[in-house]
Image (cartoon, rainbow over all chains, first blue to last red; front, side):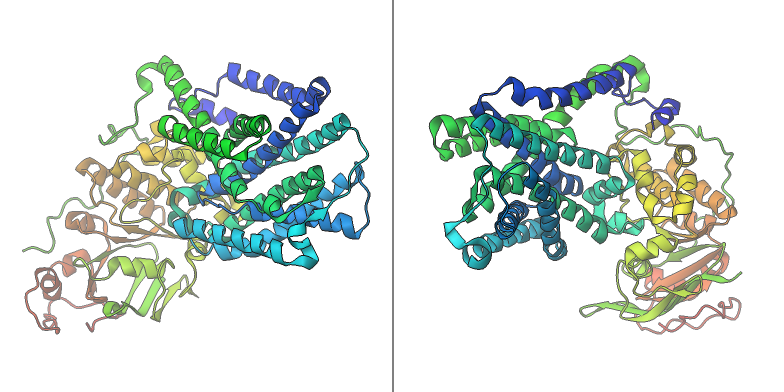
Length: 374
Length: 264
């Protein structure tokens, strides 16, 4: 890829310069190391708890964005998979009589697999529709699942909830383990989202977002591509749900299947930048600590919701594209002029320039005047 | 020459409207076939039926000897039938290069590297004169430029037949000339074309065969010179008579015997 853009005649991507590439190569490992070291430096359980939740949302938002951000299908029912992962984890630990500890983190991917399995029929059904109808269908399916969680006593123990195994750790160790587990899932989500974004498969998703029927005509198997991504999204979200349930130690329908979750992941992605890899990460890194802090400080969830609402309005007003795309556009504008006149503004209508094309061309059978009007 | 695309007695109605009423024609391998006719005569519906965007109520579509009636649009596309749309459709937020690469996974694995190499994608953009804008989002292009990008997008997959829905519609004369050159040149390389177009100069200039549609059926087929003097065609365009029966064919202009659909 890198070599090809060098040979391009047009203005190259301003971000594709050596300094930026080096910065990326250095910065990324530094960030990962810092993230791993974090709970050993900031040992206060109050801090690590906020950090843990933030990472869960980084994972869940990246997963949501991988489907909704790339394809443009706004799913507002991701709590279905969050809750499914949570209840699967509660059930499997209960029925296998497992005790708390590091070992049962190994069941988190299994919970993800289960949530992915749930996403298969849900996606198959919902993806028969498009646009607004799709949004409404996902919300409806979410409420069906919430209702089931209250009423399927044999699986969920209804509104009395289910208890999960409690690991025998002190608060600090407890949070550190959960932090690292959440970090792992977040990294998996980001890497997956990145890999999809730069693959031909991901390009098909973006094409579906821009014009699904056009993509169809190019032979893109739109139904299959959408469903596969929807299932991936469900699986990753389910893993986040499993860790969430394990962390809480007990799980109830309103926590597992929470409507606010549906909206929150969407909001975080919007804030950071829909359809980008880093946008959802940044959105979650900003919003979740704010939400956690307000909830802890004022012990009222309502205030956090109001703050979210206000923030959302501000974002829509001033950064309609989200933080990452807006920043990128600004930097691009600053950097591009170095190529001078070559950096043309998008052509708004003028014809293509003189035939600079290599081939010599002649119209084979030149102008016969209107064949029909006598 | 053999028929690459064969449409036999295709019917399609929307409620009470008979959009296609037994439409038959064929596209010979290696030809540039024009499909003309007044507005509402069913040309775009015919395109949609061939490419799987619309199902046929009755009749058959054969491509390269294979029955493709009722196949979904993605399958028809993957078989090697490329098409563009009347209102050109590109992926607005993707760059031109990305637009070209969307169809990558629809071609057989063994050909992907070759067809979608950077060199070939740039060549295709060069072919339509848009290399300069390779890294720009397609949404920033003018209408005519989008038509050219759409052509390049379809070309990337090397389809054996390309259906163009009004390739010259709404674009300026310079671009029309460029479009005509491109089509003729590709045709010389062996690509078959079926195109719908209202610009008669364009149609008469590049088509080998012209089929005329009226009220959902092909009423005349022939080389451009013959068709433009066919009284039934003039009738269809100018609305000479109100009765359904077209005037009898004058002795001087024989209709092609192998291409059916004479009855309106």
